Amino acid sequence: FITQFTTMQFRAIILAALAATGMAFVPSTGKFAVVSRSAQRTVTNMAYVPDGLTPAQYKKLKAEEDKKKKDNKKKMKGSVETLTQWQARSAEKFKNMPGAGHVYVKIRGGELGDR
View 1 (cartoon, rainbow, N blue to C red):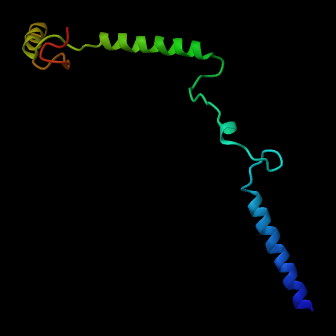
View 2 (view 1 turned 120 degrees about the vertical axis):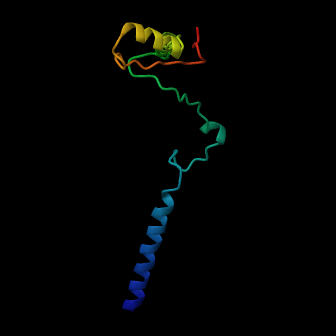
């Protein structure tokens, strides 16, 4: 009689555990209401907008930053003289001082750079 009673208790505990585990996978909309797929669709806007700014203000700010970046890249073209021209200018500037005035020549986009 005692073993039969403990077996029933064990089965009840297992059944309760299974029921609790199954409840984790039930949608939490109302009392087990059936939800259609069209009702679940929501349009999400996954754009980043900082706190305190509207999307229009943030877009304007980004446009200004992009313009500054483009203008800055236009400024940094590098040297527009050849190595021979630079050596002649350096030799004239630092007469009788070989190796003085270390300057690194930056050439971008060809021998004479992008003009």
